[in-house]
Length: 124
Image (cartoon, rainbow, N blue to C red; front, side, top):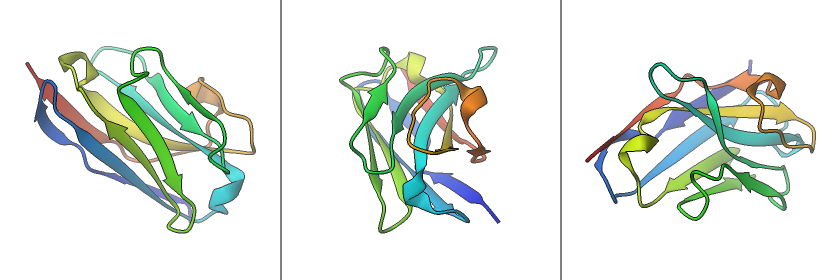
């Protein structure tokens, strides 16, 4: 049974930091691209970051580049999203997701499994 379980969300003031974690089970972690998406109320789900199995290729949305950092620990089957210099517009539910193979995508339709999401709220 595949499971992606996010943790680490919460309420933070603008300029603060949070670290999201996503613990994965049920598939061979290193053969999947891992990604983070987010969805704010009334908006479509949008790409945040992705990382391939080896960690050698990483992509970010322009809106988070330089502030967020994605990483993975293949020994722990866990992917992380370090979020610094948070802004109120980063407020959203953040979802961990996986895509089988070695090719990353910014389109949510190409991802196979999803976590339940974790709320991040940034106050001004």
